[in-house]
Image (cartoon, rainbow, N blue to C red; front, side, top):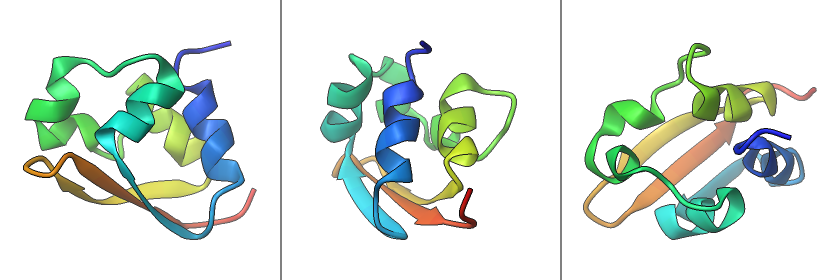
Length: 80
């Protein structure tokens, strides 16, 4: 099981549009690296990164990231 599999699995059961705090995501995956809180690029929708592969494989893309308030919004792009 990969570190970000719980994020993928939680998104699969989520509504089409969901916003979580960074702490919510950290709780799911056992912590986030500092770069997730400092750089919006960490939340980019790139298949080459393990974290984004998790949400992309669940049929979601990151729609927006708020580093100031520590929030991320996911939007479903397709159903599996």
